[in-house]
Image (cartoon, rainbow, N blue to C red; front, side):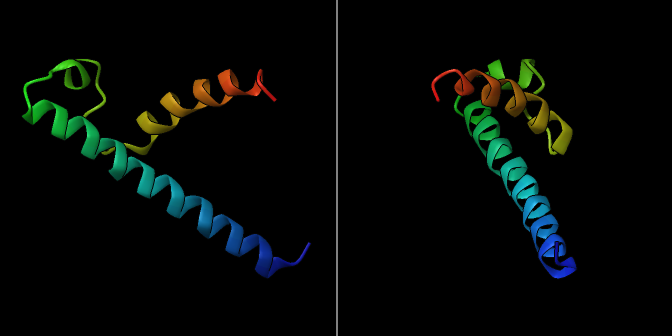
Length: 67
């Protein structure tokens, strides 16, 4: 495997994780401002990337059944 391809893949993966973190935080923040405290009470209103990854892993396993 080419080192440049591996580096580019790693950079794309990290960028995706960072962008998904901000995206999900935006959903939680907006819901909180509109009066829905569910996301805040479940700990989803966080910029910690691990919180996003923990929520995404079960979703990916759930959709594997359909393929």
